[in-house]
Structure formats: C-alpha cells, structure tokens
Image (cartoon, rainbow, N blue to C red; front, side, top):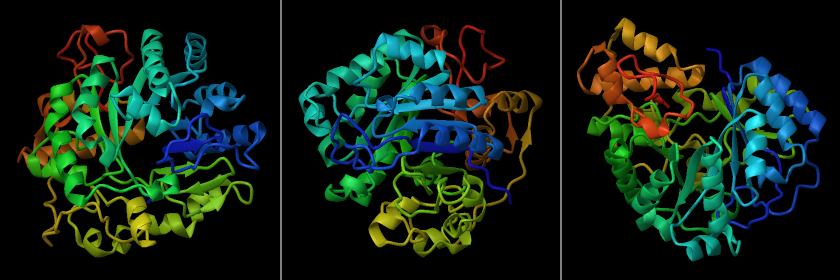
Length: 418
C-alpha cells in the first residue's frame, strides 16, 4: 500500500510571544538552528511531489517568522490548502489581508476559556484573550474561515459547552477540542481520566447536529469514532489516528515526527530527504501496520477505524504501539461486518466534489461506517446528510467558501463536508 503525507503540521519556529503551560513545543525562544527560507522552499517542492494536499503552518507563533507569507504563498501556488495556527495576538486587518493574498484558507486561533482572566493567566499574556477574540473577529470580517482551538484540561472541563456556544456566536467554521497529551511543558499537567474523556467525547457526539453549520470536532481522541458508531451518530469522517500514515510533523530544526505530540524522530531533513524519511523510516513503517498494535488496541475491532492515539500511548508508556490509556472500550473479539455499499449517482457526485483526496476518502469511510451502523446498504444524499455533521450553511454563511454544494439546496446555502 502506498502512503502519502496528505496533511503536514509544520512547526516553523519555537519563537513565541506567549508561555502556555501545555505547549508541546516548549516554545518561547527560537531554536538555535531553524530551517532557512531556502530550505523551507525546497521542502515545499518535495511535499508537493509526494502528494501533500493540506499544510498547517504553525509554531511557536508562525507570524514571528519574517518569511511566513512567502512560505504560505509558495505552498498555495503549489496547490496546497494552507491553514495557519496562531495565538492571534499579532493579527490585524493588514495581516488578515496579507494571509488572503497569500492563499491562506483558514486560521486556527487558540481560546481556552470564556473567562478573560483565566485565559490570560493560562496563556501567559496579560491581554491575550482580548487579542485572540479580536483576531477571530478580524479574520471573519475579512472573509477568512476561523477554527477555534481549545485544549481541554481539568481547569476548563466544565466550560466546554459555553466555549462551543461562544465559537458559534463568533461565526467560527469549526470548534476543535484537543485532548491534552502530556508532552513538552504539558508533562507537568494533569491529564483527564479515561472516564472524563469518554464523557466529553460522548457529549460531543450528541451535540454535533445542534451546532450546524459549525463543525464540532475532537482532536487527539480517535476513540470518538467508536463512541459515535455505538451511538449511531454522524461525524465518523473525523477522528482516527493518522500519525505516520497520512500525517506527520516537521519541527523548526527539521526533525520529522509522526505527530506534533510525539517526540520520536523518524529522521531529519538536513540529514536525508523528506521523501526518504517518509518512505523508509522504521518508525513510520511500524505505525502503518495495525497488526503491531498492542494491548486492547491490538485486538480491537475498531483499530482500522480508530487506531488509538499513538502519542498518548507513547507519553504514558514510552511505547507508541501500546494501547491508548484514555480509551475505556473493551474489544469484543468480533470483527466489524464487511458490507458492500451501493452509492447512488447523486451521492457519488456529491462526494467527488470534495477537492482534497484524503478528506474525500475519510468522508467516504465515515459515511459507510454510519450507514453500516444504521443497517443501510444504499447510500443516498439523505444518508450523507445524516452521517456528516456541520453541513448545511444558512444564508449568514453564504459568502464563505465551500467544498460542496448539495444538489437539493440553492447556491446561496453552501455546505461543507469536512
């Protein structure tokens, strides 16, 4: 099987203007030797040749790199969907317009509390909440889609429903809830219990449809798929651990790791080509073989759909093939039934309108998993609507770019399938 680094998270610098206690990068000062502009541009060409479709430019704080817009422009010119992950402090109207000119499709902004003082204390900046919210509003006013990124911890566990409400009120395209992995400065923080994690994932599965058109998604908790499947809920196109299979991270120093939250190094682009690392690294080869997974993940009937969080397994045990300690599910030793699905022409056409291949494939698998749970073997546009959460966009969202427009809706009400 051929594996493609369809999605890459690129930590361009360790330099940051905030000091977040959960930062996996331990960001603050720049690294002693960060990749140069020319080295980055060469890497972008290599990514394109390998088939990379989506690129997350982040840090530290990526806006502190003087060449950030040149890199975003090159990636966009190569046909990649570029998303920028930032704390938002440096975003102004001028910066937002520059992002648009460079082809940036969306901006991920971190907001960890609806209480400004609590957020500021947590993020290490006296006015960081005000700046982040201002950035959200500036991006939306300029037509940039915004992803609100929240890391869930003991400190803000009870605030999550209010934070989702806040994100929707501000017009966010997506609310992404990240489940803390104890790595970097996050080693000093208390992780949620497996019971707390399951309860929150169950809540997210239940409320997805309530927040349409905004997407509500979990990150670093692939067992969301098993929970949504058990509940017969949609959203099965999201989640699932892609570390080392369709996804990797590049550090400011050029290390390639399977995921931003995993410190295991597959290789360094200053020592060998990114292509050679992606195609031959023993670390990545192991992660691509679900038969090597251990414990409950190794015997679980959902290991192809979910796979468990490899980073959390590594943080907890030192072995990235071990079971995910945040998952409570007990495998049944009964494999999921293999079902042949028939897609109607309308549903197939709707799927094919998604321009990013790896998202299109995740969507197909998610729709089929939902249909299987519903004992439906014929996939129609109506089945897709039930399977996918955060789809229909009302007129208020009409000016936002869209992957897909449903044949049953007017052009003024676009929908998004991811």
